[in-house]
Image (cartoon, rainbow, N blue to C red):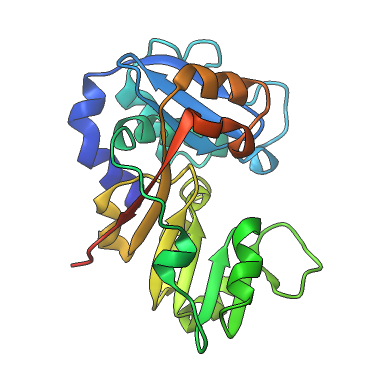
Length: 246
């Protein structure tokens, strides 16, 4: 499984680190480690069970083993999974040169292409619709927009797509692996939850579009106050990687 492969790739690094601070906000989760590295993951609050105490061990995460918390990335509890993925990303997404190539430029959809998008990335939608012949967005939340389909429709339509963009949040709700198995064309994983790891090439991924946190204090404060990507500003740096499949 993808999470296990990611854990194996950085286990030695995680063993040396402890959690300095963990923040679970309304839009994002952030985890800073004792060496100052910091990782992000989306908070899928609408998929979490509703009760007064949402995360077991809340208040006791600071100071725990980074490896122990990172293992929660495999949890079926989405909030614990977000904490685990953010911890993984703190180790995986802590370096790299900035790259301004957008998903649109990298995947380069054009006439004759069918494009699928798992997750609603508003800034890209109209640009893709103006280039590709066919365009599908797969979302769990209902929409009246004609190009937005329920998430289960991906089973049928993804194999027909020449280019696919998948949200990194699918690692959190455990749907990424199944989605990748249905893809036949080029695939990019997008968003701050995305691990910038070459391991994903083994699962059929061609491009990664993620983030590196360069100002943990600022970013964690924004997360704690309910902010997200629109307010991170230069507290994060976008990193794009092109992978080589075997």
